[in-house]
Length: 113
Length: 111
Image 1 (cartoon, rainbow over the protein chains, first blue to last red):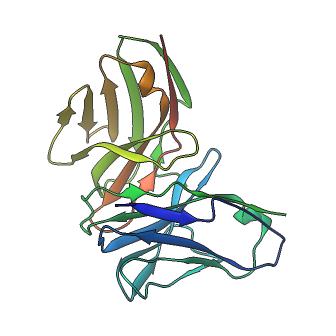
Image 2 (image 1 turned 90 degrees about the horizontal axis):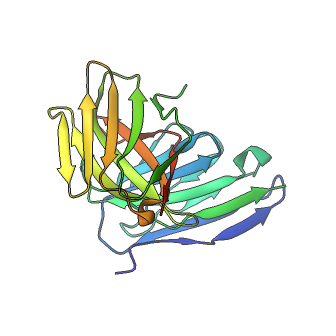
């Protein structure tokens, strides 16, 4: 099992550009989520999904879109990047119950100039 | 507003001694708590958890204590080893799907 994979590992964008951060898991997990990690802020939940076709907002959803067309994939879209979105992004997955262990990907380091 | 707080950004401990990492929370609806460990350039990995119906959970060298009345949890690592050097995050969840993380404590275990 590859676990949770994220691409790209690094990305530099200019303000206003759009891009999609990819996340995939091969553990047949129902629950997937996106976090961002900023210095002094810990990890903050952006969006999450409890299964294919179902998504919901987390703590800091503004500026991000998600969709979940398959169990395996949960892409995060930045429609118009802003410098405030410079961060490290982590994707995570779990079987489903909130007491189930979340497995995190290695992260994507995004810089918006 | 940070609902889960780790007030010590860093901690240094001698190898073999006890490491105690602390975490405070403000939301009384939180009923499940977790600790994650994170190495540089990697994602967090799950370490140990505790539900609100317990006050202690132990897994090998790692023990988590929960004091609901004080809204405080702590992670004890005994004995500490150099490989334990990492950033430790506590996280909490009310019944549901949202998790709230603390800001992390960087632990250094000195050989």
